[in-house]
Length: 212
Image (cartoon, rainbow, N blue to C red; front, top):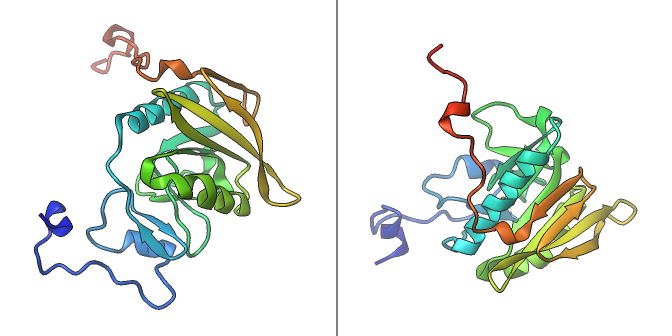
C-alpha cells in the first residue's frame, strides 16, 4: 500500500513540491492533505512517525503536571506549532507560553516571543532533531527554557536547559531521574515514575450543576 493511499489519497495525488527557497511558515496553514503534526525545518516539511506509548504517556504526564502547577499568567499546549522565523515552524511536544498570547480558537501557532518553555520527547526518528537541531533553533529564537526527554527502562529522564542570553545558547541545568523539582520557569515538582498512572480527575459530583 502506498503512503498516499494510507492517507486517503489516490495514486494520482502529487505530494507537495517545494518552491524555490523552500516552504514558509505560512504555507503550513495552506498546503492540503499534510499528515498530522507536519513541521517546517529550514524550509523543508518534516513528517513524524507513529507515536509510541512511551511518547504519548510522557506528553500526558508533563502536560497535566504543568497545567496543574503553572501560574495564571501561563498556559500549556501539547503538539502545537511555534513560529520561530519565516522558514522554521516546529511543533514542540509540550510548551508553556504566556496566557495573554492566545488569540482564539482558530489560532494555529504561537510566536516564539510568547513561549517560555519548549519540551521535546525524543523518538527514534527524531533523535538528531531533538538533541541538536531544535534546541539550537529554540535558543536562537530566544525561548528561555528547553527540556529534552529521553526514555530509560520505560521511564522518562528529563534534561533541563536554560538560555544564556549573552550567547543565545542553552546551558544544561540538570538531569532528572524519578523526580523533577525546579524553581524556573515557576516552582514545579513532577513525579516522573507516575508516567503510567491516570491523572487525577474530579468525580462528576464535584463539577458545577450545568443544569442550574
